[in-house]
Amino acid sequence: MAKLRTTAKPLFSAESATSAKFIIAVIASIGLMALDNRTDWLDDARGWLAVAGYPIHSVVQLPRQTLSRFDSALQDRRALLDRIEALEQRDLFNTVQLQKLTALETENRRLRLLLESSARLPERVIIAELIKVDTDPYRHRILLDKGWRDGVRKGQPLLTQSGIAGQIANVTPWTSDAILITDTHHALPIQIDRTGQSTIAQGSGTFHRLDLLYLPNDSDIRPDDWVSTSGLGGRFPPGYPVGTVAQVEIDTGQAFARISVHPAAQLDRVREVLIVIGYGFAADGNPLTAAQDESVNSP
Amino acid sequence: MSGIVRRRDGGLIVISFVAAVILGAVRLPTWIDLFWPSWLTMVLIFWCLHRPNRVGIATGWLFGLLTDLLRGGLLGQHALALALVAFLSRKSRSRLRLAPVWQQAISVFVFVLIERLLVVWIIDGMIGYPPQDLKFLMPVPITLLAWPLITLLLSDLGGIHHVD
Image 1 (cartoon, rainbow over the protein chains, first blue to last red):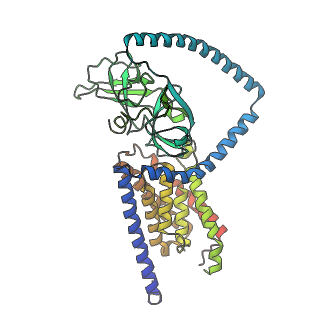
Image 2: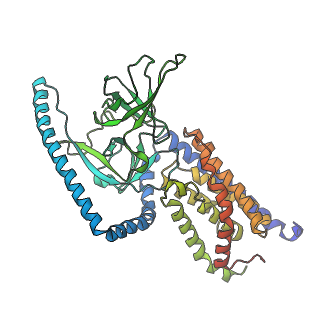
Image 3: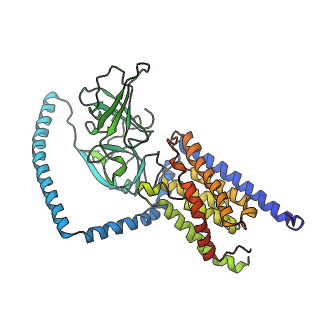
């Protein structure tokens, strides 16, 4: 500032330009955030813009893919043989189980026909791999490598081998964003297997807990009770395992019991998920449109 | 500060930003992720201090928007935070540019702290994702330690000396 006399003019204009730019940036950011948070106008634009991020995701994926390729190339022959044997055994076991199940399913369909209720259609699923970049620890969103072109649509449920995982929140042509059931903004219609009582499981923001809402203090519910999807709301297929009741806390001063559920799917270490892209004969791959927009977001 | 010198490091600016974006997008085991510093913020501060004609608030805002797109979060959230960081570095440029590295590091610490608080505490809190512990502040001290490395590396590659 000692040389103020000679540099005052350009310095001043540069300074005020900086402030003006900053104010514009602040207004633009707040505008974007408000639009994005309050409306869904930006969803399509976001889908297309996210395509721009695709090369970056691919670069990020590269080292891990190369490593896993090396890993499988370097694996001991003996270990591989053991693994094949173990898998064959499991396959045999599963096939036997499946035969039983097919018989049961045929019988079930026949009985349902007799009762004139609609048969439950088998789900059509595709496997998607995670390409998640680090998201906030409190926001349980994942990025998957299947998108619009693979038949993925907003609202389709996500399964893992052990239980329900979440649902698709946003779709781009090649990738899709999913929200996990443990996200604090997610609510899942469930029922207690033992009693048939149905309620809503809300995400807690940690991977190992869901909270059951609106169950009165005198509900018949015990730790280790299995909880599965109820299918109410039409978004999730009914009968998929969600988890087991971990804790039942009853405070007589409160209207409802505090019940937490331990999700069956290990959501913090999933690598692959199944996306349910349709049921049975629904060829357009988008059979869930009717009741779609109720069960997401708020409980 | 001749034109020739500046034209040469245009490539370096682009490369360093791309590298920072990629480093920020890498998926890491949780225990490293917790300590992963904010590379993009540091690169932005560095160029705001040393190449103010090329890198400024608009750059910060655009790269923030890119971060938002990559993370799938609220659009504009990181854009606002990085524009703020660029603004702060521009404002304290005359004081910081020639300061010793450790002194710069302290300012960078404060900038990154403000950025994290804005992104996680204020904005995420406002849209219903309040932080449940203070783990989100872990990258801040790590950034303090990483700043000298970034400065050394980029100054060396860019031929920037502290006798300006």
